Image (cartoon, rainbow, N blue to C red; front, side, top):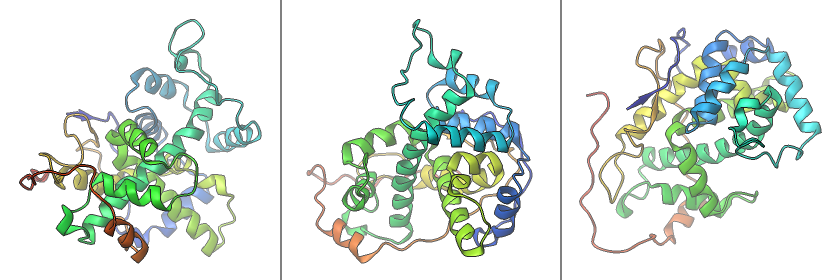
Length: 294
């Protein structure tokens, strides 16, 4: 079992619908209360399988929210220049050992796109389960969630094979990534309806995580519990791999917040209605997952 090394945080208000004042005060006021914790959290989210990158990132991290915005502006102006960054440095050393904070944020531009895909997959799975959909066809599955995204998305990088590749990379932090993406979307929506006056880049998942690591982890606790308890049709065990998942520390000092319920639209139901399973054969017994609360 793997547990993220993050120091305890303070409690946040419960109930997703009551988060407006907290979102506004942190994001509009550029208030980052938990810089050390947010640094560690982002490192796990961005590089779940790369300890060297995580350590180098946290070693460089220590700038203010204003500096983060400035770096985001610079990256936007020089879009594409960092696309050719390799996994290793020119001398064979790990790229992160000689990277600047700008290099890390350049990489985070693409990483956040992958976070969005990961969040789509997990949240669709969650929606299918909560709505009781596809019960006669084995219930929710990653394949079905990916099918919905691939069939409805029009942007680059949303083909089935690419979505599976992204899921494999970020599946062990999917609960945290999904929480960050969801909160970023909620904050962006409130910015438009409540006239906060912030620009779009203020609602990137990495910026939201920097400002609100306590809230991100509170919502992630719900997704973590879900992924460790929901059974997977056709094989034993839950959705998340208990041995590799990056778990939120038990002593983190916050309570779980449930995400808002989302409906599966008629169009999505039609897509799943004509979907063929990736393999046929004798049906296996329904798996049982041990609740993490036991």
